[in-house]
Length: 190
Ligand SMILES: C[S@@+](CC[C@H](N)C(=O)[O-])C[C@H]1O[C@@H](n2cnc3c(N)ncnc32)[C@H](O)[C@@H]1O
Image: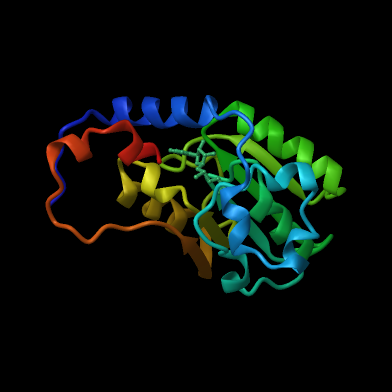
């Protein structure tokens, strides 16, 4: 059972602060990608790879498909998806932080993709129309949300019938965690 010891806004704020305050990360998420994939990501963007896996290959993207990357950060997975769906496809990356969105736009321009856009928004209330994407990808972001079932409901809303979702994320199996863990900022944002 989830122990409801913090307000949702409190959790959102500490997650936002943790990612806003990041300074020169060393790309911990890049270890999950092979050289062919990394070659598609500008070197400056690789240090901003903060994910916990490599979801895009699991999405089996096809040219022309429309993709949404939720909690896209600096956009590495969105860029990989953009390369796979090609000029007839489209990718939208959504992130809570305007600073991440700005960074992702910069890296997309550097990579030369014009079939990808980045918008500021929350996974719990996506700025994306109903039934408008074929695939949702997510890398290390659902775990940061206080309302995870709300994120899944939003993913379902924006997917077309028959759509797919590829998620790389952290889970816990303990039913009860100590209060000092459940209320610790790095347990929510780390
Ligand atoms: C661990 S990073 C992963 C970023 C990216 N997916 C990657 O693989 O590098 C998590 C990202 O989720 C964003 N985020 C956290 N909570 C969010 C929310 N409720 N809605 C949208 N984005 C959120 C953070 O701003 C951060 O950029």
